[in-house]
Amino acid sequence: MSLADVKYLPETPAHDPEIEAINDEAFGPGRFVLGAYKIREGGPHERALSFVAVDGDIVVASVRMTRIAAGAGRALMLGPLAVRPAYKNLGIGRRLVAIALEVAAKAGMPAVMLVGDEPYYGPLGFKRIPRGQISMPRPVDPDRLLSHEIVPGAMAQLVGEVCHADQARIAAQIAAMA
Image: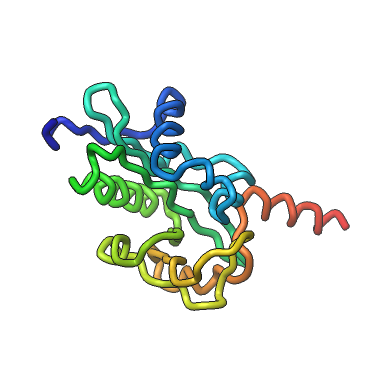
């Protein structure tokens, strides 16, 4: 395998089974109880902003983006990012994140947040979100809440509990009818 053989493509429904297998391999069944997964249960991810890395016709890595809301803020949540073990430490995950951030910026998204390790994501432009600014629907180490601002100051609008943007829209519609 050569890195030159790895292609980066927009995610399609045909990739779903392999992406699920990669995520299962990387995170196991315990991933479904995490705060980020609780948010993802609220609606679909943004397939147009999600990508795979393929070697031939095999998906070797994936990154997904999901629209989120907290307070008046709107952003994307990056993840899961997963790479098959044989392809780790080759820069494939970092390349997927860079592609996703570039496309998010072109789509006019103001910011991207994630739950992850600062030593990995810091060099990719992510910084810790100030403690107490946001919360997740399930416990999360606040030091792992990171963001990448595309529009300066956008993260200041993201305050309170993070939810899927579809859930925030439904809640706003219900409140307007009351």
